[in-house]
Image (cartoon, rainbow, N blue to C red; front, side, top):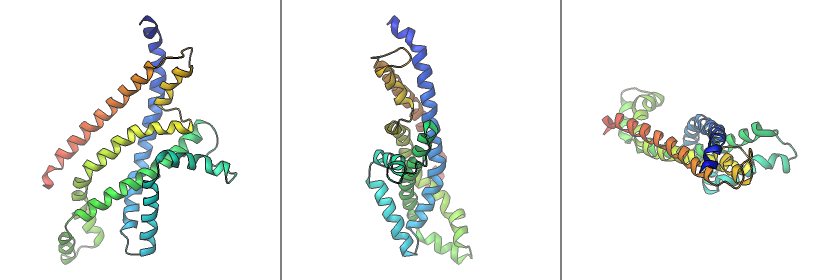
Length: 228
């Protein structure tokens, strides 16, 4: 017990650094995937069939294959197969490759949620807007958007909470996120080796982060109750 107390400041410091990397990847993914998912959703609903089919095929491939495989392909394929290591070396290159992988993966999942939310708004409201002389853009932003948000908040919150945990997959390309930091003490790091207890502390970080997100999404759902 005394040994653990001595090692605790070292472990917490390392986990804090790893968790900052986890949060960075989390927010970069959201910033990129939320708008890209909407673009993909519009592509899949397009009346231009080639665009619609192409978008649906991409979504099918991304959603049908493991994120871990996508990480490995996106990070290693340019350098090993094409001979052009576009990501560069070091932690920055790994983070950039992980960000691209996560953004593409979650944008495809978000696109299906957006599509369901948009198509869930009654068609009669679109027809009423056209009768009133509104353009399709005005109908979307002034009539459909808030109703769509009400419908997509629960599934989006589930995906975003899953994203927090999925960031741990980035360690497959040696990105030093929080799980990597905790696992390092098993192999030997900063004078500590054979210690498994730091991994239990990583679970606390995830629980706190997901607890905060759950509370925030719960409040958002209550504020949108007036659309019932």
